[in-house]
Structures are given as C-alpha cells and as structure tokens.
Amino acid sequence: MAKFIFLQRGGCDNRPQMTPEEQEAAMKSCMEWMQNGQDEGWLLDPGSPLSGNGAVVQSDMTVMDGPFAESKEIVGGYTIVEAPDLATACELAKRTIQMAGAGKIEVREIMNAGGG
Image (tube, rainbow, N blue to C red; front, side, top):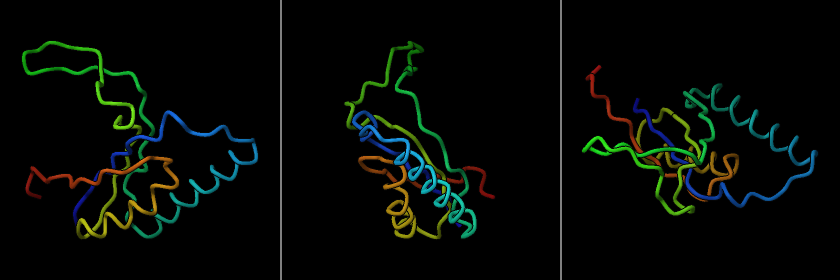
C-alpha cells in the first residue's frame, strides 16, 4: 500500500476564537479522528502543526528567511497516511480537513526510493 502526505495549507492564520467548551469539543473530535484512523489502519502519523518561522536553503548554499509563500499557501501542518491509491487518499483527506482546520489539503504520494 502507498503512503501519502497531507500538507495542510491556509486557514491557519484566521482561526476563530473558541470558548473552553468549543476547545474541548475540538480536542475530542481530534482524538476520535486519530483513534478511528489508527483502528482502521490508515493513519500512520497524525502529524503536527508547523510554526510559521522557517528558512529556505537554496542550491547555492545561501540561507534565506522563509517560507515566502502567501499566507493562504503556507503549510500549517502535515499528516501521513496509507492508502491503496490517490483517490482513496483524497477521501481520507476529506475526513481530515475539518479536524485540521486547513483551508485545503494537498495530497502527495511519498515515493518509495528504496524499492522495498
């Protein structure tokens, strides 16, 4: 089975303020999502949110402040899943997007460079 990475883009900088009750409900939903994904065998790594701070190392060995993407395109987090094909991975991304709070999720297959 193939591995896919979900890159959560946008939606990270304009999240609404939540009451403690809403935060508790969101945490419960996240925990249920993780448990379901693990029980069903498709969730390999629930990932983490990413900081907005970073750097870009270029091929000429210079290091620049970054990332430079527009805020709507900044990668705010990632998740790694296992699925038989891209279509199935996209269906799993639909189950993930609400929990992640992302504006959109880019789904990319992780290539097996080792051949095994």
